[in-house]
Image (cartoon, rainbow, N blue to C red; front, side, top):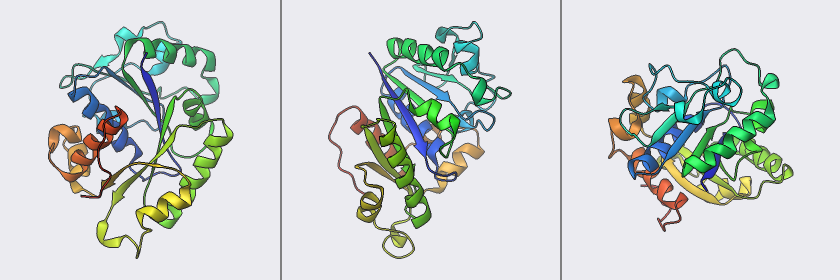
Length: 246
């Protein structure tokens, strides 16, 4: 039985989608069967971070309600064990059949080792739809005070939803600004009230990879952000990897 992760954030601009894509590709590079689902209805862009912007993939609605099967999900041309479903463009979240969506995810657990749901930023209906079915949640935040405050609110909401397995990923961290412009990592953890899954440093290769239509781990596999993503992916699998900003 596979595990289902929801990758969430309190606000836009934290790099949630790039983190989701990097973790999924890191696991696929290790031969794990991975399904990525873009759940940001109307503002989908997970395909860009995966290097699949021209793939014409099916949407999760096509599978949950439109008659297609999970076996029809688009297969990544570089990582053959990575499958992808995009978000529907013209289907309001309120019209998505929650029971059918949940049934699709139950089937996905049978077929894949890891399922990643890239949730919309914020705490609206799309966030709730995504989070309610997750086994584990990865809350992506920056180290700035506003981002951390939002992350704390999201963490509280997830706990009110009955979610227990929530971990924090502090993304786009500039080491030179910690403790001055930004909070320290310990302060971020204290403010959010959540344990840490990992730290991803600020890295221009993330933007460059998307600009060139490639996944980060293909475009620059040895850059700082790629290495940090691989360490987090290892921790997700239960391996011991030190948490440090390198």
